[in-house]
Length: 164
Image (cartoon, rainbow, N blue to C red; front, side):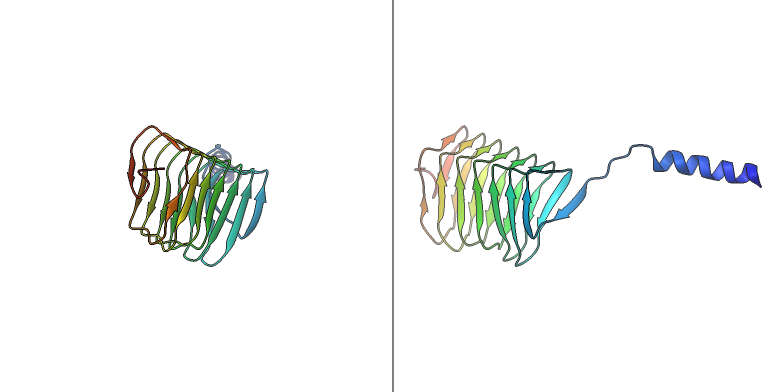
């Protein structure tokens, strides 16, 4: 019996402590400041999240009616907002894309974006100022005015953002 227990427990212990890392999703309703998250961040529907100096080793997704403020954050993935309330990204670094669709208030300023900045079919205007964009700056179908200046774009400035 003792031999049987060892033959089951030892392999189970090896599996349990094998160092496999699983990225988890961190739900944010409030402020996450000066921490690093090993995984994605989800802003639930109709909730608000502030990332203040936060590192995210994944994506940030904003739910319907949710609000995101990212100040000095470092995002290793994308920021995705679909039907969100307000999305503000300032003095941040995003290694992927920022995609905001069918949302309300939008501000992206003084941010380094390795991919594209895409603003599509939003319900209000947006402010896009002083960003460094490694991909394209694409704005299409937005109901309000898209304003801004001082954006350095390696790709193309398209549609409503062509003069930014």
